[in-house]
Amino acid sequence: MPDRNLPVLLFACEGVDEAAWADALRGAAPDVALRLWPEAGDPLDVTFGVAWNNPPGFWRAFPNLRAIFSLGAGVDGLLADPTLPDVPLVRMVDPSLADGMVEFVVMRALHHHRLMHVYEQQQLTATWRPVRPPLIGRRRVGVMGLGELGGRCARALAGLGFQVRGWSRSPRTLPDVETYHGEAGLAAFAEGCEILVCLLPLTHATQGALNAALFEHLAEGACLIQVGRGAHLVEEDLLAALASGRIAAATLDVFGVEPLPPGHPFWRYPGVRVVPHAAAFTYPETAAGIIAANIRRLLRGEAANDVVDRSAGY
Ligand code: NDP
Ligand code: OXD
Image (cartoon, rainbow, N blue to C red):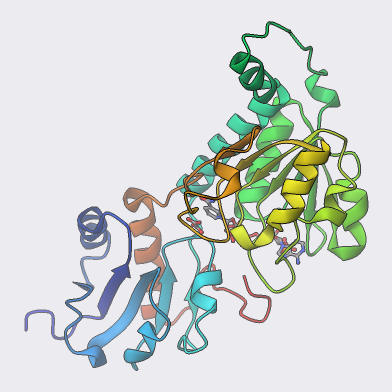
């Protein structure tokens, strides 16, 4: 075999443009032999894996793995597999992915700030009623999660002039963002927020974080932009908050069950916008180089960048 002595990278990702990824990875990592699942060859050869949406137990079949690269920023799906090999798990940190998330969150924050959800309802009854939004500097936006994505979004929102708060696990400092952390800081963070953005990773600690108790702290008629993971949201609590008016509108990109079943009430609930987990994408054009650079680090005997802290779950 011509690639006999090269490290082998197995690309095994469901639901992506495999040809584009293959081109990009071959270009970025010419010294690595790329194999595309299901053409894995001898499982003993496989030294690196690129993973997304694999069935539980999948990676256990490759005993010589040295690292697994997640195609996505969120690794909850991979960590849910108790048999995932105990090798460095690298999450996706790519400025292009963050750019996409900033575009999406800013778009929906402006949509809610400028009350487009109100006009969408008015249009259904040919109602002409202008409503003046508050000055942007008085609009309070809260961002849950201040990592690669949440941190970028918080800064972009602050740059537009929103009054931005952020919440993280450990203390963080961001220019023009009022920061809170930990369980102890959650109520103060949420108090009076008019737009709430969820960009948390899904962990044992964050599951169900978007719940009735949190919603009680928001401003009456607040809007939710949920781009974390479906299991962050207690769906019945959102439906109750929408019915009571505590929450006026929600942009939902992620769901407990994906695709969202056709009969789910979110599809038809006034004020709810359903987006099919499309807030931000990983682009092979940029991400392949990031994976390749990390492989080179590992081959030089250095630690990879952006390794998941398995004890924290992200
Ligand atoms: P990071 O790991 O960079 O950041 C995670 C942030 O969440 C950190 O600020 C972290 O705090 C905070 N956090 C974690 N646990 C807690 C907790 N228990 N309480 C409070 N804050 C907590 O992740 P990314 O920004 O790269 O990605 C975030 C998530 O976005 C992904 O895990 C994924 O679920 C989602 N995502 C969604 C996409 C979509 O298209 N909808 C696309 C990509 C990602 P600290 O700073 O202290 O570590
Ligand atoms: C991700 C995602 O985690 O696409 O990157 O949700």
